[in-house]
Image (cartoon, rainbow, N blue to C red; front, side, top):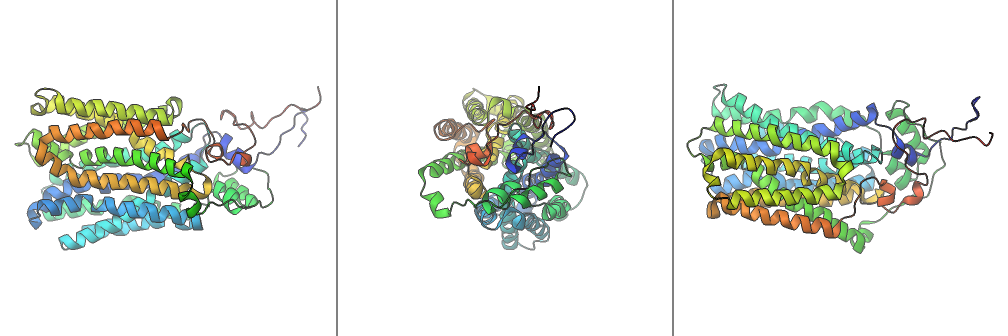
Length: 485
């Protein structure tokens, strides 16, 4: 369209418009809609550690029953991530998004009403399937709405809500423990609180439009994608209305027979497995670790220390990841985080006398938490939402997340047995070895996604022929010089 200034303003394609868009309100709305699920994921998965303190004496639970209650949601999340991840690629993101949140609402509320150990296990399975499904859905939708320059920050912002959920759990536990309520009421309220956040965003999830990238590249409905994008961004993003293009789909068989995708599954899923073993095994067992350090400490003291660790170390780690991931590089930040984790775990295992001093031990423990959040706990969530093509992106992320949750299950289930056999030293030394494997696997298997478009990473470059502009001003990258002087 010619203007009086003698310039020509072309319309960008759907893909280019998304890749070049400056950070706007619709990005933050998508991040909030997705992020509240991860607030709930963290709260529901980690509150079990506090709830078990009250459940164990009330229901006379054995060590094996405690291990199952602490870990059953994680093995269910393994299934949920696979199922929802594949469905979202086959039938579309919009048709699935919100169903996993509904399962979290139902599972959380049902856990609060559980009449017995067996029923609580069943309800934790329902909850876990919803949590697992939330990983590929929320990560990929945020990634596909994000621009190329700040994709890591925006996707990390979603996952960073886990940090608030981590801190919120001990706050609820401390409040209820100080309330004087009977133990049976305390653990039931703990579970019930977890049903509220996903309920609050259920409507937003169900009304969110289909991913424009999915619609354009997988279904071929580029014109519909342009209209959806304009509506959801309240007119901030506009793209030329194009004709339908030939859909591009990769079948599950093609994915699983392609060495490139198998290596990506190994790299993303393997690194996530190793991270979640260390993260969940230690985090869920934090109250138990504190009791091993200070056997005479009260339940409230354990919850208070957990809160201090999460607020002082975990939340700053999430924030640092959001602000610095794109500048440092997603792959680079992951192996750096694993490396520092290995040093911290080895220090807790080998430093003379450290396991007999609460403050020095918890300082190093906190540093390990900071670098878990700053590094692989965020990057293992972000990278699988970037490196796979659009038609298998949620499938790939679901596989990686599912393998990761299996690592979390293993860590949560075996940590009590490892610590019983080898004490804190043995458990931490084993975690150090796990972190070293994370460094090696990351360096050998994964590309660096930072600064590249999703189409470039997924081999769909022809879908995005224009260069990625700096996301400073939308008008700056729209304006071309006219042929007139």
